[in-house]
Image 1 (cartoon, helix red, strand yellow):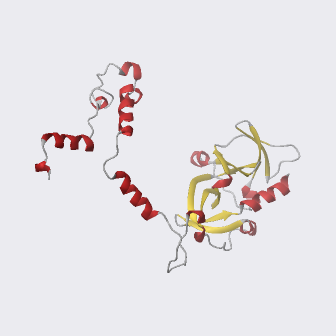
Image 2 (image 1 turned 30 degrees about the horizontal axis):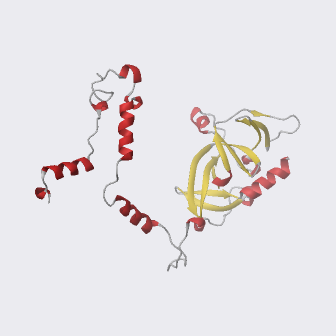
Image 3 (image 1 turned 180 degrees about the horizontal axis):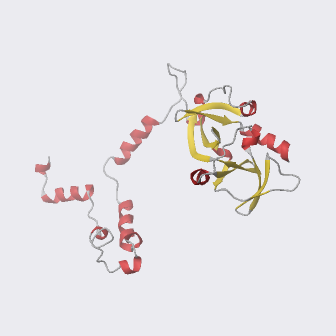
Length: 246
């Protein structure tokens, strides 16, 4: 009980729960009255050695009692284990989950495995090759000093392209650098949504999609934010590119 603690014990508890800090940035710093003489040199309190020292002291302090034990219990309860369930006969373990990158071409949302993703960058200049470039093979792109082949997934999948050149749509466009082993390709896309994880059980058979070409490269369909996303067969995709272009 709090009434049974002497003054020294009460002070110790206060120090543990609320460490006494030299929060001068709230008094005379950028969040105070700005009278600190060091502001002329460091400009902002975030660059001040006092601010850094206080941050280090917070990271180096001892954890509260039972903090580690509580987290061990939480992680043990949330870690999946191999076993039987009444619904589907097995609990999915981490190995049965896959990370994907979702992007958009026209009105179609597509996904590829993250393991083949090398980089996502802003649009770069595409240099056509005389007598070689076409609607599928767009040309060469220089990415961080490396010359890579650039291909149109929209053409390969026979997808309809959107003629939207508004400043907002142009700002969303990206180039995806993807490949397996030593081969890399660059694909212009209309938008990249990011990377996500899903279980293989969520992968559904591909229904009749926009075109037969897109269906042949679709390994399955997943549902993301209420929409269907075609999960592409990356191995077939790269195999086709290598045989059609190289």
